[in-house]
Each structure stands twice: as structure tokens, then as C-alpha cells.
Length: 172
Image (cartoon, rainbow, N blue to C red; front, side):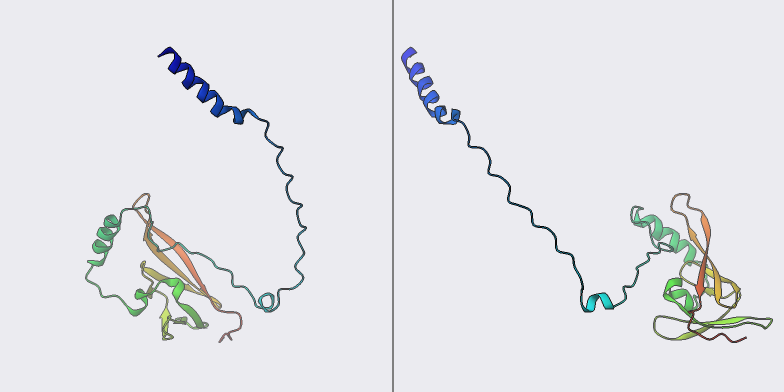
């Protein structure tokens, strides 16, 4: 048995002997190529790039449980009032296309995503979050939109402004 352990030890030493040799030095890295500057991009550079702006107003918090929001929405919807056409759209889906000022009752026209025009006046309800037209100026409409703050569960008033595009003509 003593001899068997010596033979096993010698076999292990012989198996590990090639691992003791020196390793060759690593090969040098390939030379780096210099980046060539881009002089033109053709048609892609001539097209204007639209800047994306994200608005979180009226959107659900993705980290809040769904059943809490669903219960609050059902509680608010049980007021017994039917929604107007403008209350089916988010405020940022509507486009301000015209304003009439200089009268005792200023009015404006907004266009929904379907291309249908709607006349609004001060006090008109619009938006999914209970927005109400507060003020109509020469080139913009101020809407106060209410929504529930997810952290405190209280209603918060948020001003939203719809501006008239600069290429539109104003009636004075």
C-alpha cells in the first residue's frame, strides 16, 4: 500500500510537470486604426429631426398597484355626469387652431386627433383628468387639470397651456 501511494504521487507529479514550463509572452495588440471623420451624411442630415418631449401628466405611476388606481377611477366616475367629447382625450392630444378675443366671452377652437373641431369657452371641461378652461389669451389657452398625486393621494391642480401655432392668423 505504501508503494501504491508513491506510484500515485509520482503519476500526479508527471502529469503536472508540463504545467511548470514558462508561458510565451502575450502577442502585442494589433495597431489601432484612426477614425475617419464623417464629412456628409447625405439625405439624412438634410431632414429636420423632431425632438421628443415626454409628458407624465395624467399617466399612471408604473410602480403603484393597479387595483388602487382602478378603485379611485370608479369612485370618481360614479358622479352621475356624462362626459363631454373633449373629456375622452388627453389635453396634449388636442391642437389649438383658432382664438377669438376682444369680446366679453372669448372663445377658441381645438381639433381632436380625428380632425374634428370643438369650440371652447372659459369653464369648458376637457381632458381625462378633469381639466377646465381657466383663461383664453390672444395666443394661448390656460387649462387647469386636476389629478391625484400618487404619493399623498390628494388632488393636485396642474396648469396646462395650449399655444396657438405661430403660422396661424389671429382674429382681433
